[in-house]
Each structure stands twice: as C-alpha cells, then as structure tokens.
Amino acid sequence: MEPVTFTTEDGVRLEGELRLPDGPARGSAVICHPHPKHGGSKDHPILWALRNELAGARGLATLVFNFRGVMGSEGTYGGGHHETQDARAAIDRVRPEAPDGPTVVCGWSFGANVALREAQDDPRVAALVLLGIPLDPNDVTLPPMPTPAELRALKRPVLLIAGDGDPYCPPDDLRAFTAEFGTAEMAILEGTDHFLWRREKEAAMLAGEFVDRMLG
Image (cartoon, rainbow, N blue to C red; front, side, top):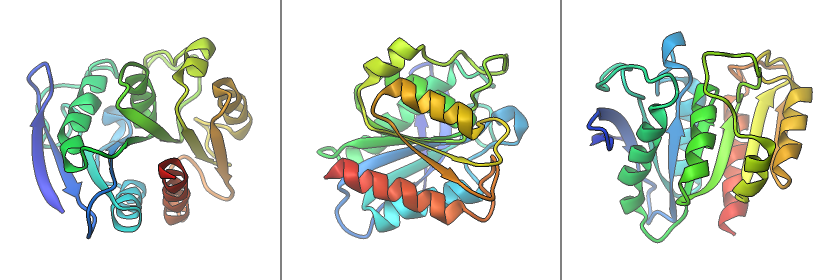
C-alpha cells in the first residue's frame, strides 16, 4: 500500500492510498467513500474489501482516497458538487498506473452519488460499481440524481449493490432505479443493511466478478 497525494483542478490537495496488483495492472479503479458529514472516509471495512478484491484478485491498480475536508485532505466539504472534481483528480492520478486499460469507478452511499455524476461527464469511466446509492428524492443533503434520460444515455456497464435492509436504498426502489439504465445489473444481499455488515467480502466479490466480465 502506497500513500499518495494529488491535486484537484481547483487546487485542493487530497490524500489517498494506492494499491498495485502483484503483476502488471490490466486496468485501474477509483473508490469513493460515504458522506463526509456522517463519518465517511476511505477507512471502512467495505472499502478495504473492495480495494483488496480489485487489486489483489482482479489485477487493477486501485486508489482509495479522502474527499476534500476529510482527515488529511485539504479543503472543505463541497456539498457533493465539488467532490466530483475530487473523483476526477483521483482518476487522473491512477490511470497512468495502467494507461492502456479501462478505469472502473466504485462508490458507496454518498460516494456512489458522486461516482455516478462524475461518469456522466467523464468518458474515461469505463464502468461503475455503486453500493447503497441513496435514492430518497427528498434528500436535500445530496445533489440531484441524473434524470432517467441521462441514465439511459450513459451506456456503460453499471452494477448496483445494496443490502435488503438498507433504508437509504430499499430493494424495490433500487429495482426501479436499475431499470432506468436499461442495461445495468443489480444485486441485493440478504440479512444486511446500508453498511453491508458481515457481507463486505461478498459484496466485493460481486464487484470483482462484474469487473472481470467488463474486462472480457
């Protein structure tokens, strides 16, 4: 694991950790963490499991980082708007580790919202893995989700994962949301919630299998 720093286009210095696979990287991945105002950071079991799966088992150069204003990252919370610049800078940092391979962006909760909105404007994002994406349309703490037309226009592989007891991403709502993409995949893990407790490795493995299919 290599500590790294990198700078956004608006001059904010962020901290992260880069994990490289044992052999040549066949692609790259960025992992976005949950809400900065509710204790979210790069240091959480589900994000550790994702990093280990993508780098250790699937051969991707994988960067997990802290959004602006979190722990050692400079700046202040940007309401979910400026955090897309953070995700873009993370993609800038990790892609040279596998310049000929695709880039997957993963996000959990708030990070899933950021990852999805970044992918709308960044053609370098080859695929998305979104865990526990908040779907409450009345949640004023997050920027609005893309419209159904924008989701259909994305036309990139997407995997959505949630626990069957997730109050922020209820299974029925997730099924309806998945259908709006047209080609997205969905997985509901039983017996867990928004934090995917006790199912972290299983969720990470689903993400890894999806990446393998995406890489062909």
